[in-house]
Length: 352
Image (cartoon, rainbow, N blue to C red):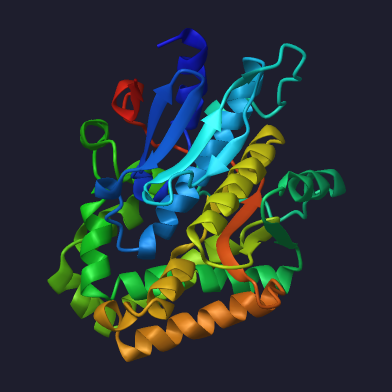
């Protein structure tokens, strides 16, 4: 593979994805790059209709387009070029343009990471808020800066933990994706390396106990899942702002566009010294429930909790009938303790 293509696709391969599942594959045909969804990677309990994976693929496409500018390629994108193949999500054509300006976000691709540490609550500067707003090109972005609303949205985000820790299927899925050692993380390359969860030592010890369902089920009857949710809600609220990416419909292409917006906003935050943490669990729970799969996964009480949490989020971000595709907190924080790793590029690319 040519060195310029290798650099471009290395950047695409660094995109974020749920549980770090990396649900993409790139097929290079001359001057075009096809982006395919890997269905066997999309086994997330959170990904109804592959929507979470389409979001991740949108982020990978945005990285590809940004990195192409560093090689002086314009990179127009055609979504779903094959109507008979929903896994062929996009074709990107690399068009040589020697005078093309290099996107200033190129260096941020390698630096971007999820940061689950507490952030400074100091409000975003006008320049930072303006830069984040200006980065949203393929979907709408709302930034919530009022402290009371941030605290409420932080609690909405922690609905994920409240339900997951008391729901057998979701509990099993989550803990199956926790990698307890660096060696395990390097071997699997999918899941959450325990250090990225930023748990203090006492909480990490408790976390090991909570992975056992009979114990967690007993703790949940005593309200431990709600205690954890309150604690996580407070961490979520330690932010300068909470952002929401809004889309007009829940079609796959809308999630790809949302993913491109998420990545560009995240890279802009990274370039400006800001940290980001996604708060998306309850949003994907809502998709599952609306899609008809909710009764298989959630109790009636859990479905009601998800509905109320989503409605509260929609009110707080003034969604006005649009769908919340992604929610995140942003602010200044210490560097994350660890970062997610990726499959080697040769496993992510086929050159035809």
